Image 1 (cartoon, rainbow, N blue to C red):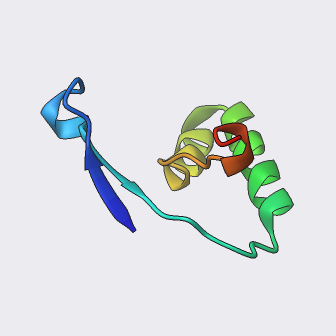
Image 2 (cartoon, rainbow, N blue to C red; image 1 turned 30 degrees about the vertical axis):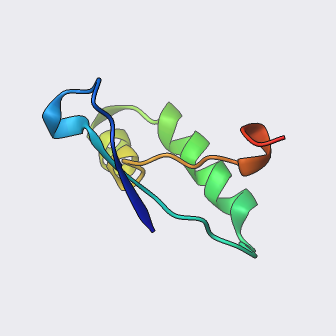
Image 3 (cartoon, one colour; image 1 turned 30 degrees about the horizontal axis):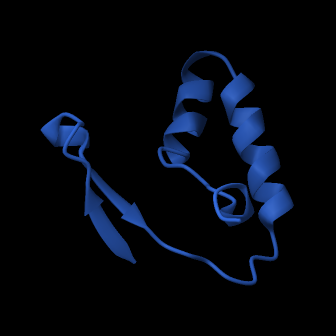
Length: 64
């Protein structure tokens, strides 16, 4: 895992952690769960979104 500080962000939001996971076998389930959480309403939706208080990045979308 690598940690970076983004100088243009507010101090409390400026530190990010990046980790590469290989051979992920449940990527489709993770994506479906993340999308479902985004569409949920109310307190239950907020609790579900809190589980995903981070971001997944598909490396192929940012690396040639």
